[in-house]
Image (tube, rainbow, N blue to C red):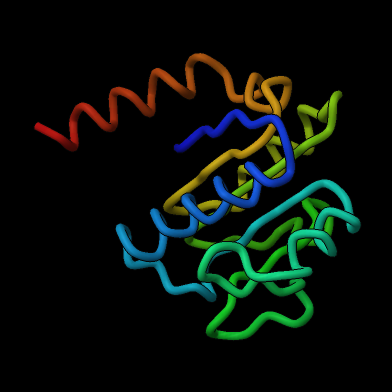
Length: 138
């Protein structure tokens, strides 16, 4: 799990691009298997308005093999992807929505948002991630 605490929308786009790079280039996950989930439709529209880094981000209903799909947490409920990047810029994010969004990932998960959102990912999850990273580097 990768966690990115950010302050603004410009930094949000940069960190999402980094997470896509990790999933696509480092883990060789196809772009069609990467999903960016956000809490609001307006967030989808804002993120899809222009490429993020080198990547075309498209709404879930317009997804294709060469693009990263973006949808709301509720709109993608029940769907899984190899890589999920969950991003939330709300001042008071929903813990339940955070976990619903995070549960879409089967191989790679990144969380991008304000500190109040990143805090929803418990210390036990962080400890498990650190243990996993230590084991894989040995």
